[in-house]
Length: 233
Image (cartoon, rainbow, N blue to C red; front, side, top):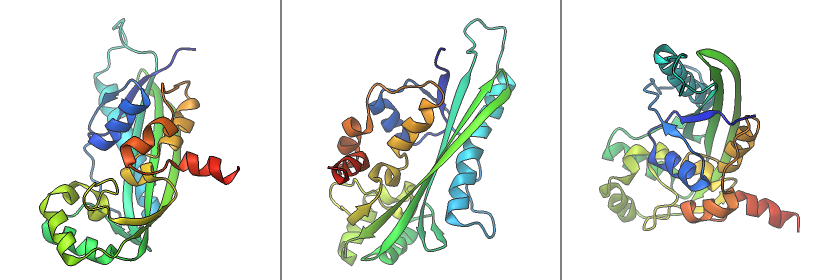
C-alpha cells in the first residue's frame, strides 16, 4: 500500500518546522477559519473542534478544484489540522491582540501553573470523498517562573508573543518563561510529535526521524518520549 499525499492545514512556521525535522514530505495550505471559541466551549472542546475544522476546510477547498483525470492526482490525500490553546482553568488564552494584551497575559501566567491543550485531526479523502478521520488530544501542564515586569516588557518588545497562544514561546532563548513542564514540550509549541506519528502510522505514513531525534533540538527541552523511557528504567 502506497502512502497518501500529506497536507498540513497550517501556515505556522513552528508546525512546519516539526514536519521538516521529522522528515515527513508535505505541502502546507492555510485553513483560514474563524478561530474564536464558541459560547460555552471548554478549552478542550475548542482545540478539538478547531483542529478538525482546519483540516476539513482545506479538504473542502482542495476537493472543489481537484481533477481526478489528472495522472498526477493522488489516489489518497491526508490533511492534518492542529490547534493549541493556553488555559487557566476553563478560561482560554488565545493569541494576544497587541502588546498590552500580551503583557496582561504574561502577568496572569507568572509564577503559576496552567495547561496547554493541543489537538491534532487527520482527515483522509479520495477524489473529494471523506474516507476517515482520526484525532488526538495532548494536554501539558506548564508552571511559569516568577519573571519580573521588566522581563515581560523586554520580551513583549521583541514582538515574539504576538502570534502565540498565551503570549509566550517556551523555547525562547532569552525569556525562558517556564519553570517546569509536565508532559510534552512539543505540544506546547503546537505539535506533539509523538501523537502525530502515532496517528500517521494508522494511515501508512512513516517519518524519517523520531521525536527523540528532533524534539530536543526544536524545543530546547527533554523529549517526553525520553521521560517515558527513563521512568521505566
